[in-house]
Length: 304
Image (cartoon, rainbow, N blue to C red; front, side, top):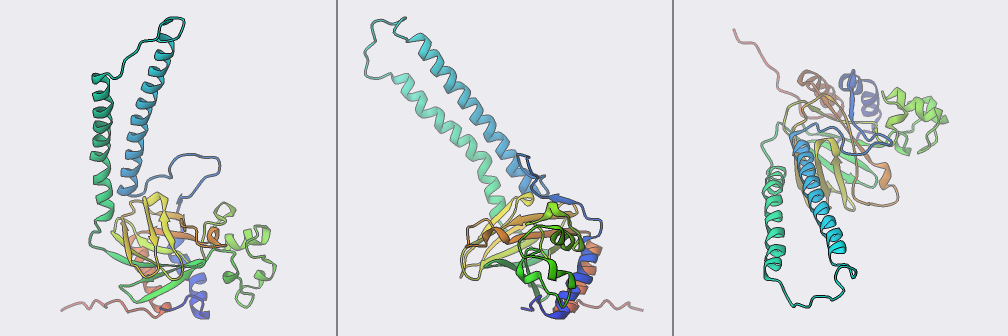
């Protein structure tokens, strides 16, 4: 794999690739301070998860209201004041049948909706783009296996992204500290302070409305590759190769993070995915192939 942090690779990542892949992209998949609920669904998988969550909320609410009402009725109806002499019985066949059958029906009902969603996530379709994501302590390596190139993705502001020989202003930046110098570094990469701890120096770039298959593994300990807006999450286990897939339906920037406790800097290994048009993707891909020495794209030759 070609490492991002060669001089030419880093220069290209800073100067060329972000300009091609990020211009005018809206930040969609990101946590918002003080908000609750899911991020906007950007894939069919995420919409399915949201719908299932809403269904479960309705089911749980009905059960909670019923049980609470039953308890209140029992407290009122069978209080000592209204029943000075307690009844004595060993069982009630009808009630016992009901509290056995009703939970079974509820679980079958939930399973009928949840299992197809699970199967859809686990049945990997044919890929338009295949990417291998490797979790490291504490950054991600992304390889475009169809074109034989890859790069490392570090949190903007981590030690690995500070290099005064390439950016003199990095002398004033303190790793992992958000101040005016770090804000300037984020702004130079096209982000604001709102994307602190979310944005990476290089992003995964994929085309919109295309099936993306991500092969996930770990290089040292267990990590997890997660993009909430896509509805995907997969553990990265050393020695094993798992897969997930998604088809993003809207151009924009989406953030995720390692979701498996993996050591002292677990909180500092985010994931950035940029979903772009097919034309922008092909332009970015050509630059990335040139800079990371990947497999050249086929050249179309017009026939007479």
